[in-house]
Length: 447
Image (cartoon, rainbow, N blue to C red; front, side):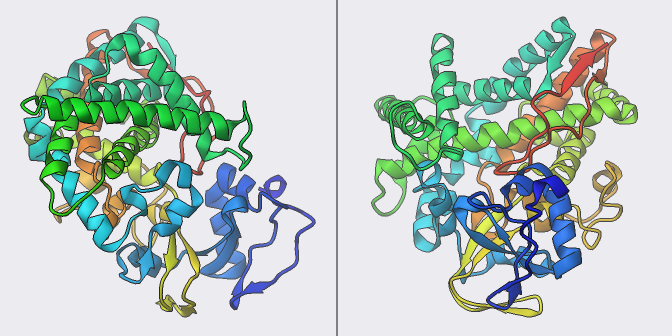
């Protein structure tokens, strides 16, 4: 942690009577510590400064971070705005559901949400579409015997998302290339010159958006077809009030982004936990053999409580989204402090996900906390998907993908008489921001 903080910046100071965490570097602020060791940074700040403190996010500026449990309620508060998300990442998230508020958000969300509910996913045959793709990928892992897990889960998720869009297999390499260039917008410096990440990222975004517009035109020309994109376009066109196709295209692009990066991370962590805890693998194999096949409908997921518990506990302990930015529109009471209107806020989902105030033995990976529960899933139990108006629209889709993946992995590997084995140091090279994921170098063997 010490090398991730600036040893020359030790001065204690206040902003709006709230302490600023020392150790920021010029230009990049606390980003080195946020990216590489966010849990210890939050712990150190809370111990030294209390429950409210400022962190310097470099180009994104200072965000007032609160580790008081009351901060989770900010995600539902009517006087807290998500517009800051667009200001931090305008090239990627402008015009998308995650950055809209109020009536604009409700109108855009209502126009497409039916396609993402269990009924819509079942009618579109998403489970039937995904199952053979997942099975083919894990069979390839079995044949190879050793994989770099995050790279593999990332490629699998791209293939699943592209299959949703009906992209022919021969076009996948081009889409992969453009998608990688699009991701450069996350870290691109604000310099628009030929060959630099900002220019390449914008060109990739424009290319992808042009392709998505063609998908929308094709869906309208063949309205009787089924599939998630066709269902989104159909629901969008039936919605009340005028909405431009720019809104639809931006949110299909959001599906491409969010469905890949965060879901691939969770999938990789599931394999890592199965590899380092044989008892989890044995429980999953027992369930998979009892079920006998990869489920394809949400109605089938109730037969897979172990796979679902793996998904939920992995999300809790290894949240792919660790921080959410917000802006206070009015003065707020947050914990024991008054927060001025206009304050830029950071809601640390990672802290709440592993808080002893909210979870028993929070540092332990326990399937029992899900398998033995009698009460319904609470908002705090799925906080990685957000809550309130901005709860992730893809929640049911990810739930289906993860259970399918777990069952396919167990059936395939057990049939071959092998199980996942961890071949790398899990803690080395982890990243926590802007999204969290294990090291790109972690390797898993199957033997």
